[in-house]
Length: 124
Image (cartoon, rainbow, N blue to C red):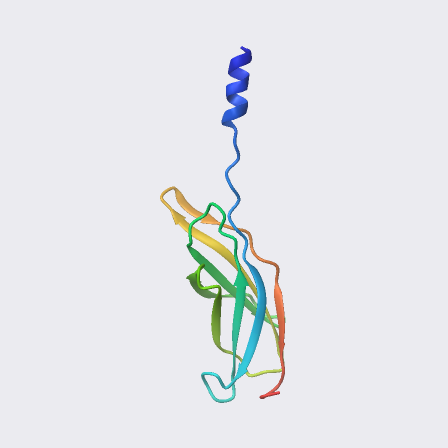
């Protein structure tokens, strides 16, 4: 009986937690891709630990609007450009998460903390 209990205790190992990227910067660029608009480049760090390089999903909300997906990028890229993000005088809220497509189904990490960036009005 005692050895069964020890085997059960050993077999209940928890799965590793997927990495959580940390946004470290957001840089607006006036008229980077279109006249009268800002592009915003966001940068993050990620410690993959035991997990492979996979994808990072990027989300953005403008002021009090709805959050929208901006797509995915390889997690090794450590950043993404958001073209035509705003005309200015708005606050953008970004968050990202790690996603890995495994044979057993997707592995989805927790969202990063929200990273807020105020973009001034035209070329400001």
